[in-house]
Amino acid sequence: MRRVLLFGLLLTFGLTACIGGGVPDDTSIADPPESTEIADVSEIENSEIRAIIEGWQAEVPGTMIGREVLEDTIEQKVYLSEESLEDIAAFYEAELAEGDPRWRRVEGMPGLQEDLDLLLAGYDIGGGIGGGIVSVTIGAIDAEQFGGSGVVIYTAKGSKEALDEPEG
Image (cartoon, rainbow, N blue to C red; front, top):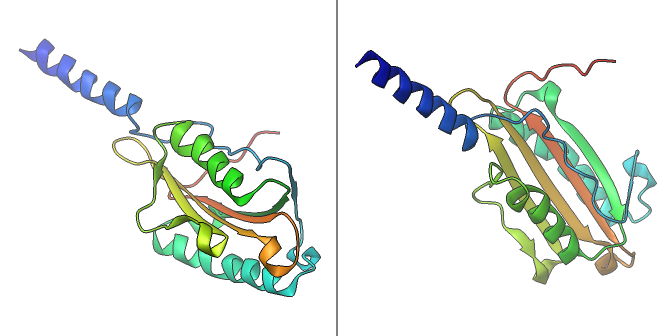
């Protein structure tokens, strides 16, 4: 009886680890296709787009912290891509939701809004037994509607548990 109980317990923990019970060691996300990272938002020439990105940079971390993401784990990045907004949405869907089934879409995020030339998406990975959660928020806007070109992309990524410092 003890062996059966032990086997059942080990099977439960094993399946939980395989089916999204924890956070994988590598939760890195590739840079968007055909993109350049924008180190300083003031480099964005269009004041309307710059204001949108600055608004996201100010608001998103607070929302993530409200979802119990640790402030010191939040990493924000901004990119400019020559790909279409649809291609950017497809890239993140393939990279996250389709690339690793442990990533799941955050409820209440509208995703691609073609009528507004806007992408607002969120993904979580982990949770369950033995793991914290890593959250990613993505905002992208087609600059053409503001007289520019390309797609400006904002990402924020953070964890609900302290991250180990990389060696080196």
